[in-house]
Length: 321
Image (cartoon, rainbow, N blue to C red; front, top):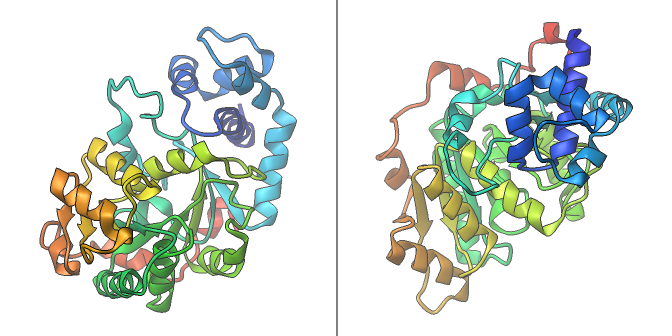
């Protein structure tokens, strides 16, 4: 199978999965990517696959259109075949967990010039409430600036509130930032963040395990949270409700054995209830400043990471730009 045909096979399987899909990963491990894609298209697979998976993966033509569409937007598909695939980080999903979502993505759709494996070499996720307070925004801005000054990539989900403050703080300091989306990377979600996402795509990375055109559903956000934690060296929560996407992401950090911190707030603040509970329960350490994190992690980013935070595009010889 040619390189282009193999990439089409990955694209087809990614669309078939459209999120975490352990049976499909098992099929790829059993048959290899080319034969797995052919089997899915034929509807003749040796493992139990949901009917919807087979329907989504029924056409190589659709996979080719996905790749073509993303290429026109300046994007690319990142697969386990590629040098920029963050294999070391995603190896944390290689367990015997019976959680059906405890599985690495099949592939990742991306927009942006930075090589994924390099910029996630030293990356911290900063997440929090959409309905953030002035206090939460200020703390996020301060922590982001401090971590950015020390060369850390900032990962978040491009949502309203804390996520947006974290991304903007990284952009303001010319630091690499990654937005992990619960929809296709060709969509601006939320729509009000179209300009923010365009800025991230210009100098950082927008990532999704969902193929182009995918609209966000509730379960996509929960799946996105596992990827946010999985691509990070540590996770910081700034303001969260008791039951929220932020607490879900901290849960994934715990499962993946990523260090987690939570910022305390006023005991009277509903926006900080989730952070307080995570600290009390031991799911997250108490964080007061960036030093609390950096003291517990490697002291300085590698030279490779520092070079990756510059504005050099991905190698032209790979034909991605």
